[in-house]
Length: 137
Image 1 (cartoon, rainbow, N blue to C red):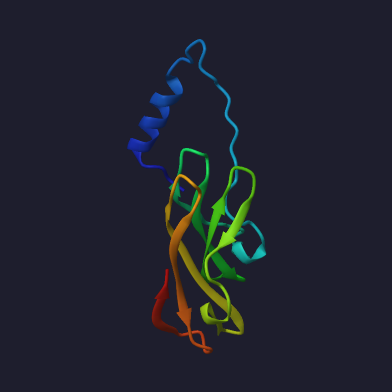
Image 2 (cartoon, rainbow, N blue to C red):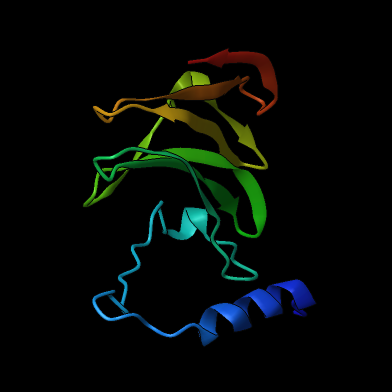
């Protein structure tokens, strides 16, 4: 993969900056979103999670791409509470269908308030996996 010159210039400039006294020079990364086989592309091993909203309490809401092998199989909404990630959204009978013999689910979260309450949508599908055009919030 080739990086564009502007990205390389910004990276080089950032790395060349001296570390100031009193500023932490180490960080801890936290993986967000579900990471099981339903969320992993079997051909590439890639996983895609996106942050849609966060609050001052350290809670994060987003969605992750679902896979059936290497085929995109919808997305799941999730909420990270500072310790664990929990799938949220409507994924019951009215919100799943069969697409190529596998369950197809599509939920997303678009808002997270200070109390950790999330709002979003789940698209409904018919038994054959085709979206009916309806959504629930």
